[in-house]
Amino acid sequence: MELNEKNKPRKENGKKDEEKTRSKSKEVGGVKAVPFILATEVCDRFSTVGFHANQISYLTQELQLPLVKASNIISNFDGTASLATMAGALIADSFAGRYWTIVISGIIYELGLISFTSSAAIKSLHPQPCQNLVNCKEASGFQLLILYLCLLLICIGLGGIRPCVLSFAADQIGMDKASVESRSWNFFSWYYFSLGVARLLALTIVVYIQDNISWSWGLAIPTIATGLSFIVFIGATPLYKKVKPGGSPLTRLAQVVVSAFRKRKAVVPEDPGLLYQNKDLDAAISVNGRLLHTEQFRWLDKAAITKGNEETNRQNLWKLATLHRVEELKSFIRILPIWFSGVIFVSATTHQASFLIQQCRTMDRHLTPSFQIPPASFAVFSILTMLAGVALYDRVFVRIARRYTGNPAGITCLQRIGIGLVISILGTIVGALIEIKRKSVAAHYNLLDSPKAIIPMSGFWLVPRYCLFGLTEVFRTVGTLEFLYDQSPESMRSIAIGLYWVANSIGNYLGVLVVTIVHKYSGHRTNWLPDRNLNRGKLDYYYFLVAGIQVANFLYYLICARNYTSKRVEEVGKKDEEIDDDAPRNGMVENGKSEPV
Image 1: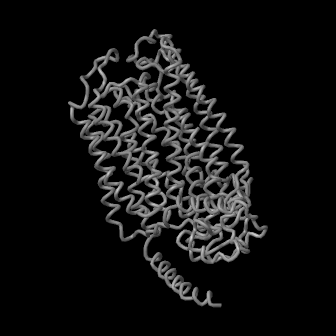
Image 2: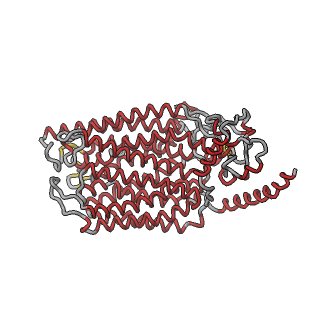
Image 3: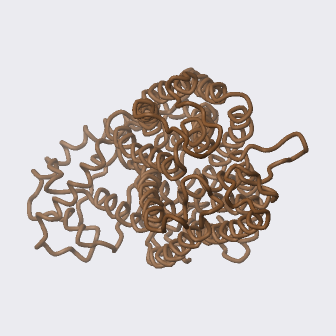
């Protein structure tokens, strides 16, 4: 009785605070705030693609670096930028919050863009121009140092922006079950659609300016656009709903592990209702509902076992963790095998964009007798396919699939990812077949030893490859983002999006390793990936190699997906017994069940 009396004032204060928070949340956030947030992400993607899409051309032509070295620099940049997202996510979810992480990172990112643009305009930071592709003088160590410093600033900025913008936008509209089912549109699909528009503009406008006017202007335009979007984002600050960080997620996960280890000899009760729960303690990290008990990894349940009279330990989370925190760790562990398949996927596809540009540069790219499409701009076909695919996915594909699956979302996230992996394998094989055709035409016209010659073969042969790449994004990329966001604990969603970028990071580094090994050991006279003359290479062999890696990764993914068990959430305002485990979510995976694949 005495203990209950002590808890009454705390509960009453908690209710008052909750009511204040809800009344305030009605005044801020909502769909009206989302465009200002997405503007930052759109301009980030506009500038990133504007810099990145044609960067292979900048490094090989302006800085005159060999193909493999230039491609590795790009992959290392992608890897570092993606790895930095985990640091940004931890900062956001632990103490800074998503809003301030975006603000500080945006300033650093803009400084990086300004530095890179300035280095492109200063001729002393470039080597002497080379008239042909033979015996060219590469950029000096000092010139490369300036390049690396500029790229480092960009990486740090992206590290804070990328994991936070998506989660921050989702915070404004609510992603609980009731909110998701009340909408006729999929937030993640339209988020990716907006990024596709930015990429489309970058590949048409920015790349054209870089190839035909000047690199200075081609880099200045995305730099200015990013600066303006950042001003717009700051100006809309009063509209934003800012979710307070719930403390270090890594600390909470460590507390569960330590507590479970301390009680490793304890027996887990059959009734999960006997495990320790504390709604007040978990209130800040379970705004949209507490996680319910799952049967997997039951040894972690030992962290929530109360041994005798442990009332004094209930404030020491290193000795006694709540069930919700135990389930946070379980959810995190469960998504890792699925996440790892993304690492292998990226490692097999990371260099293909750069190699496609180099293939396209040797082909006839004329749209009219007087106008030819820049090599990097051919990726516009991938973007157009992705935009059309995203638009048709909800309106056509979901409606058709729903008739056969009975799932309101058409198919589950895991099924969506699996389809994307299959399409990617087909795309890689198509790329290899096109390369065989390109080299046969070059041999027919005796152009194998002319690296700068234009082969009489239309660059539009590469369009099917780009279209398949766009379809891969519709299924695999969007599905992965949605899966990571939905299946991660709500207090770790920035980290979940950060995991997506970390997969890209590790995948890029592994991709660099694969390309380096292939380049080193595939011979000198008939190297698969030659430094200068692609016509004498065996790029088709490389494509078949990574297609094999993708097939093995798909089989691994099937095993993981078939054995995956989704998290279970007690929605706010519902009791445990009212939870319907069999109710599928709109665009989300089913709660507490293994997903069919």
